[in-house]
Image (cartoon, rainbow, N blue to C red; front, top):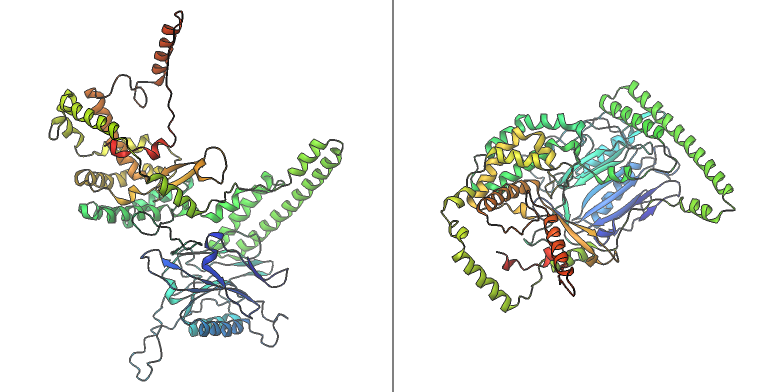
Length: 615
């Protein structure tokens, strides 16, 4: 953490341990900012280097503050410091974020038609082609605001508020008892605007200022130890997009999927050839993501809702919910009456929290006094004061990658004699088995397995899949397909039949999210974890269709032995247990009778089995 300023205010910048070697603090005499250098960034869309970035986190005291010495305009001071930084780091790009106490209204921060090629003698001037208008709910302008617009024009930087996905209306960022305003901004250079994925003013009012969330579409070129994390295709690993299916958004999701912006691309993708199967699949997933955007899970939301203080009650929860409903209503309408209602709701919520906190402390004191003669109860009460901690491990991403790469790619030494036995058996079996003779390529039995996949098969598989299951790396959950099956099934039918006929299996279906589940022992040892692979739901459905056909064929042709009871419809492993019990009774009931059995439990069997002997 880098911090600067007086204890009651100022700036704090927290850096995740995983990227700390990509962040360097820049020394500066600017007392209103913390400046860091971000290195090793790649554009996630094309994996091209972005170059180094200077992140300037700012808090400018309001106009007239005694914090200023001679200069009264804090934004002018900021501009001077930014110009000095550009001289020191001419190749670096700028991001400025923080509370600037500037109100810019709906003033635009760019020069329209900034191409002046027709004017001669100005070869030194580089025009800025940026021309995206911005909107604002706060239409007031102050002196700091005018200075901020001048700063933007001079340095070719632009405000994200009011013009970026997630905040196209220029939401209010600060609500006090005196009124509301937009004074918190994220400002980026023109070259960085295209890699901004989203910008939001979050509905969180722990203070008068709403937090800003800005997501850039970038990857880190390397981890802290400079070892690049890459998959087998030698490309950067992508972050999983997560969605939580919510019934209140079902109508909106279906509406989005039924609109022309969704149906037309899907109708077009049905006609694409097998060579473009990856592109067609990307179009489908992108449509799903756009329709499910209100259900996207962000880390910020999950962290905030995870734990509540011990004095928290249902009354607090209800008032908190009412407060945020009023806040959302005001942000939507920008109506003064809605602002008053929100302030009243916020004040009521704070008062209730203070009352509940005071009552809880009084009760805790009473419990401690009553239990002073009972050490067990006393220390139990004291320990209950410790905050909840999310279980963590000190295993780094590099260690996980190294462990799973070694586990899943290890060369298994196969006994030559055993391999010859297996090979000889399979060759003899294929030539003598009546079932196998009737299932040679071109036979009717094999042709049934290769028939075109029908819509009924797809619908049945989708219906049979359980809700609430984790998604693969594409973020698609089965509830999305169930709620829009009339729209997605025609595309999936074309997709699956293309895969079946061409044998071109999509690469993204071969990717999985590996989730380590602790089994036993030391939590700092990766060997004590079992990896669970979360694959794409779309790939699961295709695999389920193929599996259903194979199971039906195997049962019809009698390809499975009667002794195989596990994973078969109409069979149960209790049959095997009954057989074992009968054998025990038969042989052990005799005088001197004995029965020898072997039970084998292979360690990491699915991870280390030699696949060359299976196929």
